[in-house]
Amino acid sequence: MSKTSFNPFKAIEKVLKPKAPGPSLTFKEFHVLEAIELMGREKYVGRIKLSKELGLGEGVIRTLLKHLKNNNLITINPKKGCKLTGKGEKVYRAISSRIVGPFEIPKNPIAIGDFNVGVMVRDAAKAVAYGLEQRDVAVKVGALGATTLIYTKNFLAMPGVDENCFKDNPEIFDLIVSRFTPKEGDVIIIGSAQTLEKAKLGAMAAAFETLKKLYSQAS
Image 1 (cartoon, rainbow, N blue to C red):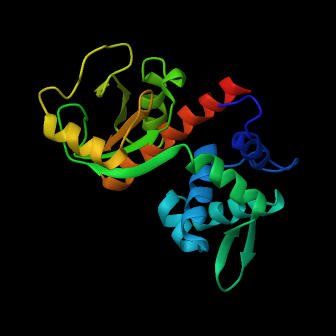
Image 2: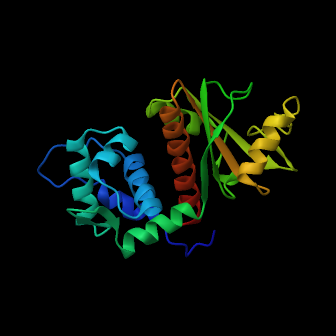
Image 3: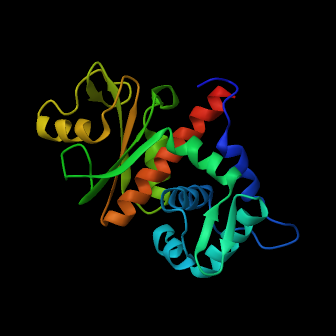
């Protein structure tokens, strides 16, 4: 990633600044990113769907949308719903060009939940230490945790371990590779939880955190 790359997280920081005086915001950076991702994929999205997908009450969603609108990231059509502006599309493209998924992953010895969802962050190995940051972020949004894997030498390894963690489960490895088609240095994060929704939230939150670090390293 070049040093002149557009950093979408700079735009997100402005959305998270509360107007003083006033109450502190109850939505987080992850919710802003998820909302932008959803609108980028589906064009128009209504408040009810956003509330369900983000796990936030409609009152919080209204505040989130107000902040997005005030920062010229979305427009709101009373009949169709919310849509990204040109600026919002730029943020979405910067994020979606680096993230692949989410895809559901079958239960396996590496992941820890009844439900597991994987997300890949392209060329992000240098933004990963030992996978603890990804795990902690996933837990904060309600997942049991997250397993971080790095694609290297044509296999998937945990950070700091030069060993194929799926050597005894080749069918899971083949499934993951077929869904993500990773390249050297790509990172796959598997969010795990008791529900599919929480597993997805955990994986996406951890992926966003990894991408944020990647952009900060490039700036």
